[in-house]
Length: 280
Image (cartoon, rainbow, N blue to C red; front, top):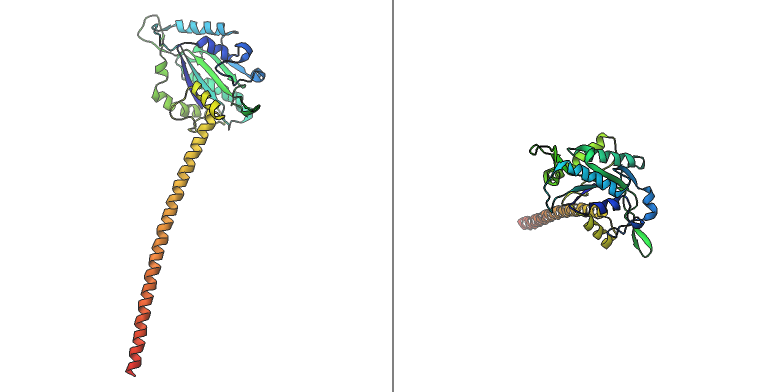
Protein backbone atom coordinates (compact mmCIF):
# COMPACT_ATOMS: atom_id res chain seq x y z
CA UNK A 1 0.00 0.00 0.00
CA UNK A 2 1.63 3.17 -1.18
CA UNK A 3 0.78 6.75 -2.08
CA UNK A 4 2.58 9.24 -4.29
CA UNK A 5 3.11 12.94 -3.63
CA UNK A 6 4.80 15.46 -5.94
CA UNK A 7 6.45 18.75 -4.95
CA UNK A 8 7.27 21.85 -6.95
CA UNK A 9 7.74 23.86 -3.73
CA UNK A 10 7.75 23.48 0.05
CA UNK A 11 10.34 20.72 0.00
CA UNK A 12 12.45 22.05 2.87
CA UNK A 13 9.35 22.36 5.03
CA UNK A 14 8.36 18.78 4.20
CA UNK A 15 11.84 17.53 5.07
CA UNK A 16 11.64 19.35 8.41
CA UNK A 17 8.31 17.72 9.09
CA UNK A 18 9.52 14.26 8.11
CA UNK A 19 12.58 14.39 10.37
CA UNK A 20 10.55 16.10 13.14
CA UNK A 21 12.66 19.24 13.06
CA UNK A 22 9.64 21.51 13.38
CA UNK A 23 8.88 23.03 16.78
CA UNK A 24 7.73 20.36 19.24
CA UNK A 25 7.93 17.89 16.37
CA UNK A 26 4.42 18.88 15.26
CA UNK A 27 3.46 20.24 11.87
CA UNK A 28 0.47 22.61 11.68
CA UNK A 29 -0.60 20.60 8.63
CA UNK A 30 -0.47 17.37 10.59
CA UNK A 31 -1.68 17.67 14.14
CA UNK A 32 -2.04 13.91 14.44
CA UNK A 33 1.52 13.43 15.65
CA UNK A 34 2.24 12.16 19.14
CA UNK A 35 5.59 13.72 20.16
CA UNK A 36 6.02 11.14 22.93
CA UNK A 37 6.31 8.44 20.27
CA UNK A 38 8.60 10.33 17.88
CA UNK A 39 11.59 8.67 19.53
CA UNK A 40 10.45 5.46 17.83
CA UNK A 41 10.91 6.98 14.36
CA UNK A 42 14.08 6.06 12.49
CA UNK A 43 15.95 6.79 9.27
CA UNK A 44 16.93 4.40 6.51
CA UNK A 45 18.49 7.21 4.45
CA UNK A 46 19.15 10.74 5.67
CA UNK A 47 21.58 12.81 3.58
CA UNK A 48 22.58 15.11 6.41
CA UNK A 49 21.99 15.79 10.08
CA UNK A 50 19.62 18.72 9.50
CA UNK A 51 16.87 19.55 7.04
CA UNK A 52 19.08 22.21 5.43
CA UNK A 53 21.87 19.69 4.87
CA UNK A 54 19.43 17.23 3.34
CA UNK A 55 18.00 19.96 1.12
CA UNK A 56 21.53 20.89 0.03
CA UNK A 57 22.10 17.28 -1.06
CA UNK A 58 18.83 17.33 -3.01
CA UNK A 59 19.86 20.53 -4.80
CA UNK A 60 23.24 19.00 -5.60
CA UNK A 61 21.57 16.04 -7.33
CA UNK A 62 19.09 18.33 -9.07
CA UNK A 63 21.92 20.48 -10.43
CA UNK A 64 23.41 17.37 -11.99
CA UNK A 65 20.21 17.01 -14.02
CA UNK A 66 19.12 19.04 -17.01
CA UNK A 67 15.93 20.99 -16.34
CA UNK A 68 14.10 24.12 -17.39
CA UNK A 69 13.33 26.70 -14.71
CA UNK A 70 9.57 26.42 -15.04
CA UNK A 71 7.27 27.44 -12.20
CA UNK A 72 5.41 24.15 -12.34
CA UNK A 73 8.58 22.01 -12.44
CA UNK A 74 8.40 19.02 -10.09
CA UNK A 75 11.58 19.03 -8.01
CA UNK A 76 10.85 16.01 -5.82
CA UNK A 77 8.61 12.98 -5.51
CA UNK A 78 7.62 11.28 -2.29
CA UNK A 79 6.40 7.72 -1.98
CA UNK A 80 4.67 6.79 1.28
CA UNK A 81 4.50 3.06 2.05
CA UNK A 82 2.19 1.93 4.85
CA UNK A 83 2.94 -1.16 6.91
CA UNK A 84 0.24 -3.77 6.11
CA UNK A 85 -1.73 -5.19 9.01
CA UNK A 86 -0.75 -8.75 8.11
CA UNK A 87 3.01 -8.09 8.30
CA UNK A 88 4.54 -10.07 11.20
CA UNK A 89 6.00 -7.96 13.98
CA UNK A 90 9.47 -9.45 13.51
CA UNK A 91 9.45 -8.49 9.80
CA UNK A 92 8.52 -4.81 10.15
CA UNK A 93 12.08 -3.51 9.73
CA UNK A 94 12.71 -5.87 6.82
CA UNK A 95 9.46 -4.71 5.21
CA UNK A 96 10.59 -1.08 5.23
CA UNK A 97 14.12 -1.96 4.12
CA UNK A 98 12.85 -4.01 1.18
CA UNK A 99 10.28 -1.32 0.33
CA UNK A 100 13.14 1.17 0.06
CA UNK A 101 15.15 -1.24 -2.11
CA UNK A 102 12.15 -1.74 -4.38
CA UNK A 103 11.59 1.99 -4.82
CA UNK A 104 15.29 2.48 -5.56
CA UNK A 105 15.08 -0.29 -8.17
CA UNK A 106 12.40 1.70 -10.04
CA UNK A 107 14.57 4.83 -10.25
CA UNK A 108 17.08 5.17 -13.13
CA UNK A 109 19.60 6.89 -10.86
CA UNK A 110 18.99 4.34 -8.13
CA UNK A 111 19.48 5.06 -4.45
CA UNK A 112 21.70 8.09 -5.13
CA UNK A 113 18.72 10.30 -6.01
CA UNK A 114 16.95 9.43 -2.74
CA UNK A 115 17.66 12.17 -0.22
CA UNK A 116 15.44 10.96 2.63
CA UNK A 117 13.86 7.68 3.75
CA UNK A 118 12.18 8.01 7.12
CA UNK A 119 9.98 5.57 9.06
CA UNK A 120 7.24 7.19 11.15
CA UNK A 121 5.78 5.40 14.16
CA UNK A 122 4.13 8.42 15.79
CA UNK A 123 1.28 9.48 13.47
CA UNK A 124 -2.44 8.85 13.34
CA UNK A 125 -3.53 10.09 16.74
CA UNK A 126 -7.18 11.11 16.47
CA UNK A 127 -8.52 12.30 19.82
CA UNK A 128 -12.21 12.60 20.64
CA UNK A 129 -13.46 13.28 24.16
CA UNK A 130 -9.94 12.81 25.48
CA UNK A 131 -9.64 9.31 24.01
CA UNK A 132 -7.51 8.01 21.15
CA UNK A 133 -9.89 6.80 18.45
CA UNK A 134 -7.39 5.77 15.78
CA UNK A 135 -3.70 4.95 16.06
CA UNK A 136 -2.17 5.28 12.62
CA UNK A 137 -0.12 2.55 11.00
CA UNK A 138 3.64 2.84 10.74
CA UNK A 139 4.78 4.08 7.35
CA UNK A 140 7.85 4.95 5.31
CA UNK A 141 8.47 8.30 3.57
CA UNK A 142 10.86 8.06 0.62
CA UNK A 143 11.73 11.41 -0.99
CA UNK A 144 13.76 11.50 -4.19
CA UNK A 145 14.80 13.65 -7.13
CA UNK A 146 12.85 12.48 -10.24
CA UNK A 147 15.91 11.94 -12.42
CA UNK A 148 15.60 10.06 -15.73
CA UNK A 149 18.19 9.37 -18.48
CA UNK A 150 18.88 12.31 -20.80
CA UNK A 151 20.57 11.42 -24.10
CA UNK A 152 19.84 14.78 -25.75
CA UNK A 153 21.63 17.46 -23.73
CA UNK A 154 25.42 17.51 -23.70
CA UNK A 155 27.01 17.43 -20.27
CA UNK A 156 23.97 15.85 -18.62
CA UNK A 157 23.41 12.17 -17.99
CA UNK A 158 20.00 12.80 -16.40
CA UNK A 159 17.14 15.27 -16.55
CA UNK A 160 14.22 16.07 -14.23
CA UNK A 161 11.01 14.43 -15.41
CA UNK A 162 8.55 13.32 -12.74
CA UNK A 163 5.87 12.43 -15.29
CA UNK A 164 8.09 9.87 -16.96
CA UNK A 165 8.41 8.02 -13.65
CA UNK A 166 4.73 8.25 -12.75
CA UNK A 167 2.89 7.51 -15.97
CA UNK A 168 -0.39 5.66 -15.61
CA UNK A 169 0.89 2.42 -17.15
CA UNK A 170 3.78 2.43 -14.66
CA UNK A 171 1.58 3.13 -11.65
CA UNK A 172 -0.91 0.44 -12.73
CA UNK A 173 1.83 -2.17 -12.39
CA UNK A 174 3.56 -0.62 -9.39
CA UNK A 175 1.82 -2.49 -6.57
CA UNK A 176 1.90 -5.91 -8.26
CA UNK A 177 5.65 -5.53 -8.87
CA UNK A 178 6.05 -4.30 -5.29
CA UNK A 179 4.24 -7.42 -4.05
CA UNK A 180 6.49 -9.69 -6.12
CA UNK A 181 9.57 -7.96 -4.74
CA UNK A 182 8.43 -8.53 -1.14
CA UNK A 183 7.45 -12.12 -1.87
CA UNK A 184 10.87 -12.85 -3.34
CA UNK A 185 12.47 -11.27 -0.26
CA UNK A 186 10.47 -13.58 2.01
CA UNK A 187 8.35 -10.78 3.51
CA UNK A 188 4.85 -11.89 4.52
CA UNK A 189 2.92 -8.69 3.82
CA UNK A 190 0.06 -7.88 1.45
CA UNK A 191 0.51 -4.66 -0.51
CA UNK A 192 -1.39 -5.59 -3.69
CA UNK A 193 -4.76 -6.52 -2.18
CA UNK A 194 -6.64 -3.79 -4.01
CA UNK A 195 -7.19 -1.74 -0.86
CA UNK A 196 -5.47 1.24 -2.39
CA UNK A 197 -6.27 0.52 -5.99
CA UNK A 198 -8.09 2.93 -8.25
CA UNK A 199 -7.78 6.67 -8.32
CA UNK A 200 -5.26 7.95 -5.79
CA UNK A 201 -5.95 10.37 -2.97
CA UNK A 202 -3.62 13.11 -1.84
CA UNK A 203 -2.08 13.09 1.61
CA UNK A 204 -3.96 16.27 2.49
CA UNK A 205 -7.29 14.82 1.39
CA UNK A 206 -6.55 11.58 3.24
CA UNK A 207 -6.01 13.49 6.50
CA UNK A 208 -9.20 15.48 6.01
CA UNK A 209 -11.13 12.24 5.56
CA UNK A 210 -9.53 10.81 8.69
CA UNK A 211 -10.44 13.87 10.77
CA UNK A 212 -14.02 13.83 9.53
CA UNK A 213 -14.65 10.11 10.07
CA UNK A 214 -12.21 9.04 12.75
CA UNK A 215 -11.04 6.31 10.36
CA UNK A 216 -7.79 5.95 8.47
CA UNK A 217 -7.81 5.92 4.67
CA UNK A 218 -6.90 2.22 4.63
CA UNK A 219 -9.75 1.44 7.02
CA UNK A 220 -12.20 3.29 4.80
CA UNK A 221 -10.97 1.46 1.71
CA UNK A 222 -11.23 -1.85 3.57
CA UNK A 223 -14.83 -1.02 4.50
CA UNK A 224 -15.57 -0.20 0.85
CA UNK A 225 -14.19 -3.55 -0.26
CA UNK A 226 -16.18 -5.35 2.43
CA UNK A 227 -19.32 -3.46 1.37
CA UNK A 228 -18.68 -4.48 -2.23
CA UNK A 229 -18.25 -8.10 -1.16
CA UNK A 230 -21.46 -8.03 0.87
CA UNK A 231 -23.37 -6.48 -2.03
CA UNK A 232 -22.08 -9.20 -4.34
CA UNK A 233 -23.08 -11.82 -1.78
CA UNK A 234 -26.54 -10.21 -1.48
CA UNK A 235 -26.99 -10.34 -5.25
CA UNK A 236 -26.04 -14.03 -5.24
CA UNK A 237 -28.57 -14.69 -2.48
CA UNK A 238 -31.24 -12.76 -4.41
CA UNK A 239 -30.43 -14.86 -7.49
CA UNK A 240 -30.70 -18.06 -5.44
CA UNK A 241 -34.01 -16.86 -3.96
CA UNK A 242 -35.36 -16.03 -7.40
CA UNK A 243 -34.37 -19.48 -8.68
CA UNK A 244 -35.99 -21.10 -5.63
CA UNK A 245 -39.22 -19.14 -6.23
CA UNK A 246 -39.31 -20.24 -9.86
CA UNK A 247 -38.77 -23.84 -8.82
CA UNK A 248 -41.53 -23.53 -6.22
CA UNK A 249 -43.92 -22.06 -8.80
CA UNK A 250 -43.11 -24.92 -11.18
CA UNK A 251 -43.78 -27.49 -8.45
CA UNK A 252 -47.04 -25.77 -7.48
CA UNK A 253 -48.13 -25.75 -11.13
CA UNK A 254 -47.29 -29.45 -11.48
CA UNK A 255 -49.20 -30.19 -8.26
CA UNK A 256 -52.27 -28.31 -9.50
CA UNK A 257 -52.12 -30.13 -12.83
CA UNK A 258 -51.78 -33.48 -11.05
CA UNK A 259 -54.70 -32.71 -8.74
CA UNK A 260 -56.77 -31.68 -11.74
CA UNK A 261 -55.88 -34.89 -13.57
CA UNK A 262 -56.74 -36.99 -10.54
CA UNK A 263 -60.02 -35.11 -10.13
CA UNK A 264 -61.00 -35.71 -13.77
CA UNK A 265 -60.01 -39.34 -13.52
CA UNK A 266 -62.04 -39.72 -10.32
CA UNK A 267 -65.11 -38.17 -11.94
CA UNK A 268 -64.89 -40.45 -14.98
CA UNK A 269 -64.43 -43.49 -12.77
CA UNK A 270 -67.52 -42.58 -10.73
CA UNK A 271 -69.59 -42.10 -13.89
CA UNK A 272 -68.40 -45.48 -15.19
CA UNK A 273 -69.47 -47.16 -11.99
CA UNK A 274 -72.97 -45.65 -12.29
CA UNK A 275 -73.21 -46.78 -15.89
CA UNK A 276 -72.20 -50.29 -14.90
CA UNK A 277 -74.90 -50.38 -12.18
CA UNK A 278 -77.55 -49.34 -14.73
CA UNK A 279 -76.46 -52.14 -16.97
CA UNK A 280 -77.27 -54.64 -14.28
